[in-house]
Amino acid sequence: MRTVRAVTVAPGVPDSLRLVDDWPEPAPEEGAILVEALAVGICGTDLEIIAGHYGEAPPGQERLVIGHEALGRVLEDPTGSLEPGDLVAGVVRHPDPVPCPNCAVDEWDMCRNGRYTEHGIKGLPGFARERWRVQPKFAVGLDPVLAPVGMLLEPASVVAKAWDHIERIGNRAEWNPQTVLITGAGPIGLLAALLGTQRGLTVHVLDRNTTGPKPDLVRALGATYHTAPVNELDFKPDVLVECTGAPVVVLDAMCKVGPNGIVCLTGVSSGGRTINFDAGALNRELVLENNVVFGSVNANRRHWDQAAEALARADQSWLNSLITRRVPMSDFAMAYEHTGEDIKVMLDLTS
Image 1: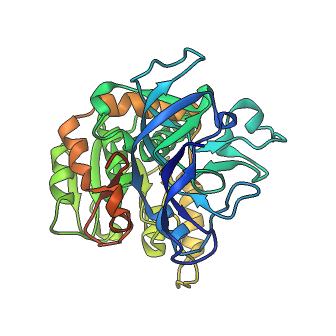
Image 2: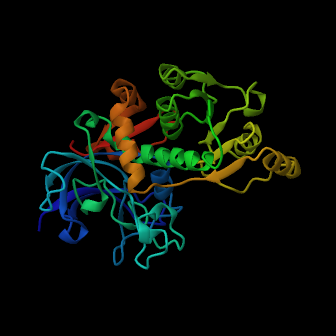
Image 3: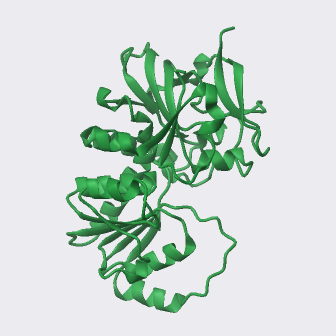
């Protein structure tokens, strides 16, 4: 049996990250399209899985191949949906088998019963292996120009969903947004800012970093960079996309938008912290200003396609600048070391 190298963990066991040299070749049951892996992006979810906080191996297996921000090249596709040599990414979440009402109509990002599966996270092998397979329904073709940065498609799909839902909510009434504030200049925040500028909005990004690449990346988009606390800013945005998950920032964000404003929460808080906060004042503001606060996570196929289009239209040198480290597979452990200075780390699966 042919084998491949794969980066794996034992879910629930802290620091069990291993590079396995003889992982089984992906079985045809995983999908008709066979893909040569090029790279995976690393995010906080990977680090939490490595720390043992969560993660679930496929049924009957003890270890989980991690990696959900995929980029690969098609080796064979007997279905004809893609051609050999095409760049491809795999959709992370798959619908539950029941299915729930949302999964039944391919809105698996809005699964209601929690029985979905996710590559590299929950019940499905991830993409940090030299070869993987995917069903045509979950294979997203990429423009060749995205070869150096295609692993950004997964976080971009999360942002595309956020903007899709922002616009659906905004259209409850006559809506002509002008200004958006993004809190957090990590990969999600910067990609949210990119999609904001592509919509012709005046974009502001707030982050604590005063040095490093983040301020310049924001300004390169034509956006304005801020380091002051949210509640000290001298304007009220029409839209606020919160990407930090920091409790104080989340609460300040909900209080900051203008009339008919929309706050989209994409950052996940860790919990366990109590803050003295005037909930009554927040409620009064939300009601009297017709404001909306909602959470957004994951993405369905429509959002992946929207993200692929947005990345292909972006300045490719700017996207390249988001990748602050490219680590060969032979040095895999270095890719998962949190330095606090990176924006996006990429694991090169071809070396």
